[in-house]
Amino acid sequence: MNTINRYLIGLLLITIQLFAQQKQNTAFEVVPLGVRGGIDEKNLSAYLVAPIHTHDYICLDAGTINSGIEKAITNKVFNVSPGEVLRKYIKGYFISHAHLDHVSGLIINSPADSSKTVYATKKCMETMENHYFNGEAWANFGDEGLGFKLKKYHFQTLVVGEETKITNTTMTVKAFALSHGNPFESTAFLIQNGNDYVLYLGDTGPDSVEKSDKLNLLWQTITPLIQNKQLRGIFIEVSFPNEQLDSSLFGHLTPNHLMKELHVLSGLTGNETLKNCKIIITHLKPPTQNILKIQEQLQKQNDLGLQLLFPEQGKRFEL
Image 1 (cartoon, rainbow, N blue to C red):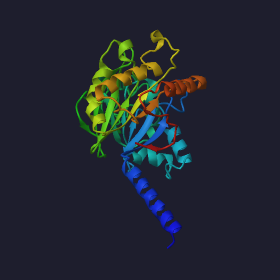
Image 2: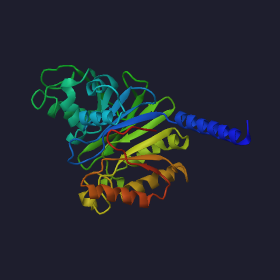
Image 3: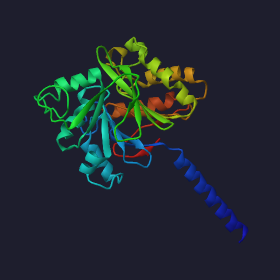
Image 4: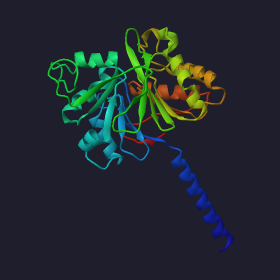
């Protein structure tokens, strides 16, 4: 074997090893079914998350379901029918708050769905039971609440800060309170699988505007996970560009406010700890020029070395 061939074989082996290490270093796979806030009813907040190499997905929020599944099938993420993904792959729903852009897909698809669990905190669950699944606005597909109970869904109320096993998966979840503009509440979900975690935040305003400490308390909770490199990614919203006045945020974030909050987190975790941390930006609101402006502003203000991800509907990625 000549020197060139040995060099090429060695290079190939190194490439294979690096690829294998990269594959081993991912813990979750994500399929966004909807990534926007606002008026696009075919592309509203919903993220499938599963342990890597499984189909044991949970759906974090459920603004858009069927359109997102169809888009994922078009992108060859799934090779089964939309109905099979809905009924067999999705093991449960986690609803951060009961605004329609986060629950409409769950409601509309419920007649075609299979039996599974819907998880939410007390206030969110009560709103869904009283105003949606109540036998009048929509049939009650749950096992609690008003009207005749069809009992397709098990409505499981989450206690903030308490670990809960996620049915039909190897994952657990802890819920944390968020402030989404007085008097609205929202929720963050810390998902664990083995030694790995992912954090999903529903809609939230910054502590400084909300006159709250909820984000600060959440940052304190996840600090050791970041320091130990166990947190694989943070899903967090940025709904408006920096030009949006604080008085018109309505419980949302801008690039300025997100970076200020992440600097608070960086102060807790220590210098350089957030470098290359994956921050998945959610809930960007149309029109398109606003979305592009948000992305540009975030990239310019990224002085922490974050790995900013802008998910696209139906396109799978790994954490």
